[in-house]
Image (cartoon, rainbow, N blue to C red; front, side, top):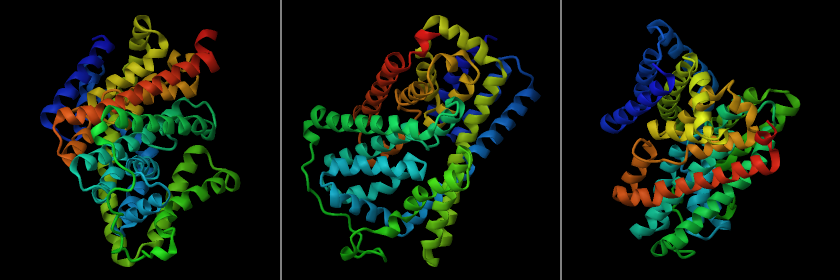
Length: 431
């Protein structure tokens, strides 16, 4: 069967199974890998070997990073340090919507999961606003803020596979010099979206009560900055120059090293009473995330081994301009299975070695894929259902206040990426 047709059939069935049965993405993605391999003419043995190799490749890339992020998150949660972080932010930012969006934005990167960051912030944001409509607005902003940094800032599990595949030796500092200002600009646009599109959700500065963190063993208002809460993140930042300048680590080794440093710091500062439980819960949560991403790696590896990149991408480039190909491909994969990390892993595998890489500069290329991963955050997106459950809103409202703002963010990222490519890099016109 034509690889492009097999790919469309596989995505369609993954979508149907995800919506109908709501089972773990790992099983739908593994099933999709088997189906695609057989439809594309691969032997059963070659298909299974591709699945095994894909799982191993992704686990080696993300296992340490995600485990460390999950353990840090659980240890901070067990000690109520997240409340302290929000309280510290509130000392300098008095507007509740900005607090919500900025908290989600900041926590998603070091915790390596925007959903985990949202779950941790949920009970705290409940204390900032008692009015249901206003509280829900804070929850939407926290979710969207987390997704924006998660989809744009290095090093997150979304950006790492894209950077690894396409950077060509480019410094991650250069990429973040572009992506961080862009992500903050997009987040500011989301604040305006809520302010003007939903005037009934405008939140007055200073409403609500401060988070109740008096139950924390380390809380002392006189001490001001809660250094224990921020310590793992400070350790991660301090260890970056050590990894690069003193230890001379590669980018891949550096990411794993700094996450291990942050985790050791969190474990060392945690009291004995919460250390074992935090480690156990963090490992369980990390396992769920890692296996879902490994399923994506299996599907992506089988797709590549089938020859899809050479045949289907050539067909796509005849149908649409080449600069649209990464964006459209990422949007299709995101629509089918709902995970931005999965989208990044599969898209990186599919595009690797194709003419797209040589036709588009790495920075706009990564931004195009990030933009595509934000376009359709709907029923296959597990975050969509989590937000729906925590807000209690109907699906129409969640689409209006979660799906559409993220889609607008994706469109904004896409526009910036295209402008950068044509105005500053000119790779396409040169080729």
